[in-house]
Image (cartoon, rainbow, N blue to C red; front, side):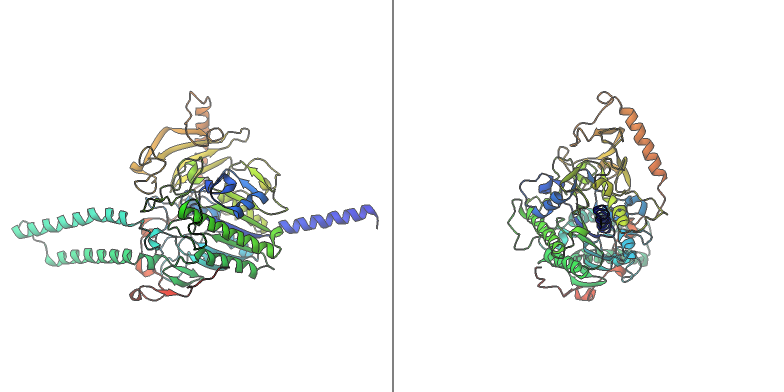
Length: 579
């Protein structure tokens, strides 16, 4: 055999191996909850220990301008799974509440939406979601599971159907109590005044009120109050539980060894699928409050319970990477790490301990479209395929994961709907240097809040704000008085003309530009307004999944592993062991 022929054969073999490795790889998507971009060593933190997450950066690509499609959990996760702005699927609220709060709500990710898990499952992938879901559960009955992960392309689910809240952990306070107290005071006062007034006019004979009508009115008020008091008294049992597929296995949720249990489930899923392509979404409960950490991590960090939780999550990432390497899967596995939005800066415990994270130099946090609320970690590792140790400072989005992994799985992108994400692989491999996102639209719930514009012929990244949240106290970096910033009415300030920043020069969004300081001020606004018009025309009316009707607790949708009279109690998980 001649040297030339041998060279050709070797080159073909190399090309064949590379093509095989790029086609249908395993996909591991790791998503933290409320993690600040400044909480990780690879993004500049020098006091928290995150060696395993930092290793992803050393061995892969670090996205420095990676943007969550929403600064709140539910809409951000909907965008992540579908590659589409949440407004397109009805997963963006017009009311003050922008996320699902109750397991027995009727809203959720519509069945008409196509998730990456559905498309990968059709291509023979084993698919699993482990951890937090937060995209709905049932529609019309307590067992139709229309919004459940298994109805959206996942073969296996082990985790929480809603989210981790302070109310789930005894002694950690309540995110509802203050709001409920405020919300009930006025209705109770009005009802009391109305009843006294009716009694007076009845007594003096000015008006005859049928006692039957008065009785029905009193009965309705009494039942409503009893149901409300019952619900919030039993909130932990009704809302904080762990499921395996369609079955509740622990109600209420126990935090003991919880991260170890999630990690063990993830590792076992990988080990069950070493010979078939798999998609694993490991959606951490860390570091949303209520904060928790196991005994091995409690009190070990320099940042209290929050830091302990971050370091425990890093430990979990390390175990997932270890099992991938143990089975020689690194070369055919894409690993992605991110957070669903920025750190919740207003999270302060009743004891005054900071329970929210750190967004580095960036302004604001969770629930706002200041950079601190939407600029999140973006780490991607795939040895031999994506660049190692590279930094990419181009605008990218969590919606980009959808088209990226769908293409890698040899699946077809849906042609009957707008997909807002773009394939990241050319950028990750260094084949292109410019992001396909010329514009990114930043929504505060269902309201278009800001627009990012990165012109193709410029290093500037312009950001235009149509309104901004009113921080409280005014000179703070968040909405501490209301615990979270809201998106409309008296909670915001509208700007005409809009505020303009150049993030390439002012990433901290400190000094808005003016016609005097930026000669192209009005030209930039004109281009952005045209982009908004084009974007708005691409939107279609869809049912609002976060309407009050869809958000409210509906007793007939309540999942309960025993019965309401037995306080919905069961536990087949106690004593979960470490991996």
